[in-house]
Image 1 (cartoon, rainbow, N blue to C red):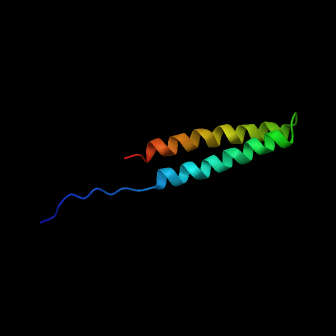
Image 2 (cartoon, one colour; image 1 turned 120 degrees about the vertical axis):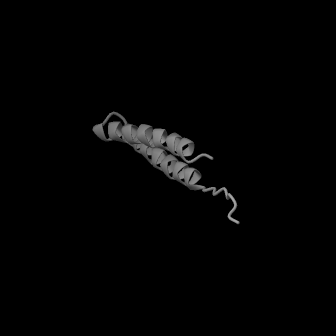
Image 3 (cartoon, rainbow, N blue to C red; image 1 turned 90 degrees about the vertical axis):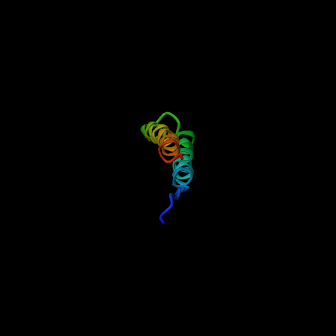
Length: 62
């Protein structure tokens, strides 16, 4: 007789950690090169990666 099994995954946590590290790198680029176009791209990368970190946690939550 087949029973129901719940499958859990840690993908949300792993993706959140990955995107958080990318966000930190983007923030570091912004800090190292203030007032340049590179800083703007670093800030954009940090914001997008932060959004994806939170989203991944919500998408893969049980």
